[in-house]
Length: 119
Image (tube, rainbow, N blue to C red; front, side):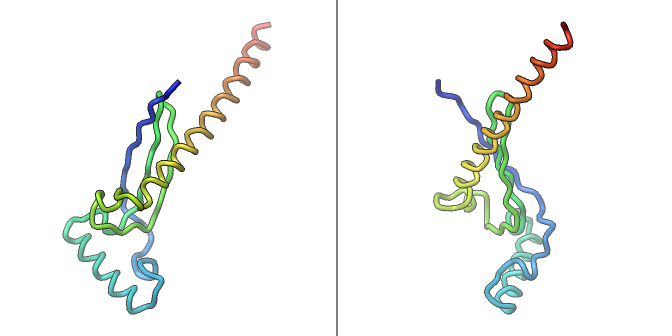
C-alpha cells in the first residue's frame, strides 16, 4: 500500500546571534557576512537568518526536523537539489515513523488498560 506523505516547510526568526555564528572562517569574514545578513534582513528577506522546520504529515500524524542558523537568498535557494531540504524531508519522515511507532504502542497499551478496566 502506497501512502501519501505531505511535506511542508516553515521558517522562523533565528534567535541565535548572527555575529560569531554566521561564519567560522575568521573574525573578519564573520563580520562581513554578518553585515550582509543584517542588510538582507533589513530589506525584508526572512531567509537571510532563520530557522527552518520541515514537517512530514500522513493522515493527521506528523514528524518534524529543524535546522537553525540558516542564511539563504530565498526559499528556492534553500530547496535546490543538493541542499539541506531533501535531507530534512528524510529526517522528518524518520521522525514520523518514530511517532507512529510510539502511537501504536500507546494504542495497544490503551486497549489493554480499557479491557482491564471493563472487567
